Image 1 (cartoon, rainbow, N blue to C red):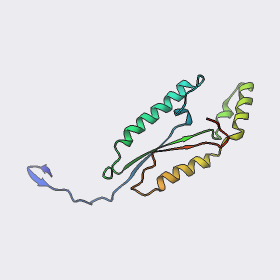
Image 2: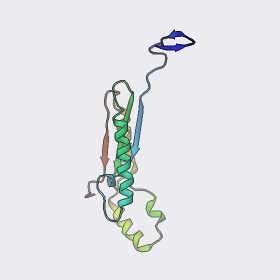
Image 3: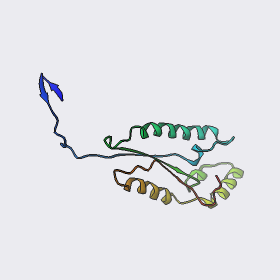
Image 4: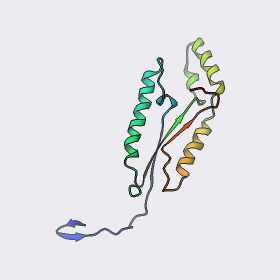
Length: 133
């Protein structure tokens, strides 16, 4: 009960329809394993997991909040287009031979959003079957 000018006010239980807030954050498999050459990048992805863990703790049947981390592995992107070193570009192009399509990541996101309100998908790792780690 709330008071407004000393008059009791009881809000109607369903003035507005229930809205489910779905937080979907893209992270990376680098958030699960650090390497010597990408420790700062991995640290940012570990931070994403920590922030999302805070949101997970807010989830309840009454909060209408769901939080999902989608962690892609090697995925085709424009990253290699911006590499100026020929040697690094060649190595990156070879690495991207086994990369998956961004459509795979979109399907994972659609899956989490499509689940009923009583189901929370906390984390999904999507990577090429050829990617070792």
